[in-house]
Amino acid sequence: MAGASEAVPGQAEAHVHHPPYLQHHFVSAEQQFDAAKLGMWIFLATEILLFSGMFVAYAIYRVWHPEVFQAASKLLDWRLGGLNTLVLLASSYTVALAVHYAQLGDQKRLVRNLWLTVVLAGVFMVVKYFEYSEKFHHHIFPGGNYAYEGLQIPYVGQFFSIYFVMTGIHGLHVLVGMGILAWIAMRAQRGHFSPEYYTPVEISALYWHLVDIIWIFLFPLLYLIH
View 1 (spheres, rainbow, N blue to C red):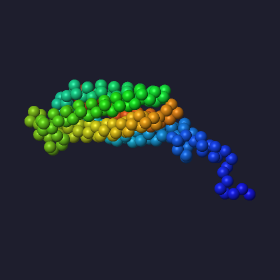
View 2 (view 1 turned 135 degrees about the vertical axis):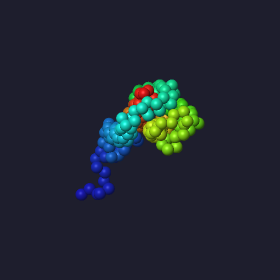
View 3 (view 1 turned 120 degrees about the vertical axis):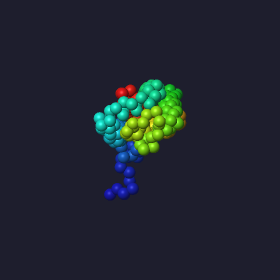
View 4 (view 1 turned 30 degrees about the horizontal axis):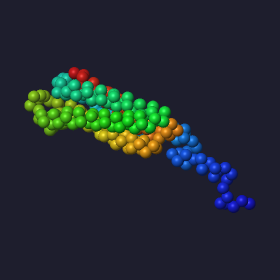
């Protein structure tokens, strides 16, 4: 009878050829990738539910007070909102290129496009900082703290409550995305990814695309529809 410590034939050889990036509870890299991608899609679904609640609140208050939303939205600078839209669209392109070059094994272009995406996200936040600063300077705050003399109508504070909550939570997601992409870029610089393994690159790109898509809805609803 073979001892309990005796290895199963072929087990030691399989362990030797086990790639370092493949977790031991997965049979193959393809299975690990599919599981990670499914997990990310489930997470993104919860994010969509989060923002869906905000969009529903926006729709309800807009139906109740259309004249307030029409007047208050004119206080938003559509040029800054449009600039940030272009910036995020460009960042979606660069992160898609990063995934493409990861699949090709082009480390230099992979790293370059990841850092470009981080820089573009930073530009978005800088523009948002100036936009918020201008609002605060004119005493445009959410809820009962609204004190802008240029527009004094009932319920205008509710519009800016929705504006600050929706754009603020979106901005928080942008900051999180910047941190994730910077971490992925640093890993890419150390050569952690290859055509055989680029799962973190694609998973983080999926998250970033969702951040961009949410802004594509926020921009016209808040800035353009009067």
